[in-house]
Image (tube, rainbow, N blue to C red; front, top):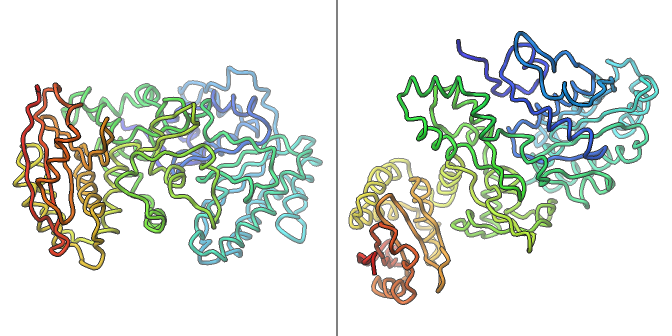
Length: 531
């Protein structure tokens, strides 16, 4: 019998009562509510389980202990065996995830805030009064404390959705920011009435933005202790979804080792601290299991990165180096409408993740988390940058991978030339970097192991491509010569690190002709890998 997978389900009560699979995170949640401070913030990308975490917290603070015990033969959750009193607290939960903020502006924001507050007031039978949303929020918190005899728990889900939705409309965005700043500021002035505050969103807060008054708010976003509170670790996947994995292997005849390797490459790889622990995006993974093991970009297709691509273009970021970006800890906090940096935004939205951490410099290196994001984001970038028709892309994609796998440089060049000729002339820039970027995007979309500007002891390789049997060192020139490109590879001995690997080494020189806007001359040579 096929098990119920909670795809898109965010209600903890419904998941437990209706028999859906639930990966037990309550031990980590217990740690959160007993030892991390009384007001905490957590940032994670969309569809990473933030709303389910909020729902679970609500059930815990409302004292719904039976939901955490055995249900219909399913084992009790971890928090049941831990030190928790199960007292009932009044809970205000505000969810800003759904709303037409760009279209309806502050009217929509205020409607959502008032809806959630009024429902809470009705539930606990307290007055809902006040002249403004902030005033009503403060009065509601105080009234609940007085009525219930216990301090109040406030849970705010997707605090920044109104801000992200309006980020390209500066005036409206600033109105939203000012409105939310006043509303969230109530949490500081109501501190004596509050037991616990939990706030989630995609973007990390800025001390000078909407949370400027909340100097007691603890940010757990990059805290190693909570790096797996959202998302699924490899162990959790293998322990909780063995029935799905077993069924897929039986129905497809796949080898288990190879299948698990591809599963990790496709959906794992998100890292949220200096701790080298990675997690799967739960939405994409559950969709994969539900679709009988089909590998598709499920998470990526649920959102559009148009704003981020526009930001990359505006800030003239080298897209060939997105997989080797370096940011400092302070950069993650730089979020406001006048000073948005693309690098931390790409991380916070889930298109890049932490791949390395330098403790001495307090510096993070960012990279694509997995094949799903790498391929899909490169595809989106190519559509925006190159504007090439689908038939032209298909012709290229059907020929180029085989050419690299077979070591046939002539076929690779013959496939590239008509594709480059189809790029609209008015978007081409006559720089070597432009053509290097085009080739890099193509390689990424084809899922070839490609890296740009690879550092060696004596310089940087323009593009390095590795297959099972070949290593290609490609050097580009503009309005010069292929011979000059090859000479640079020789002079700087770029292929030295790959000698002795057992792979066939090939150096490729490509010269682009700016007048023809295409490959001019090209040349390649095979390198003796043993010398």
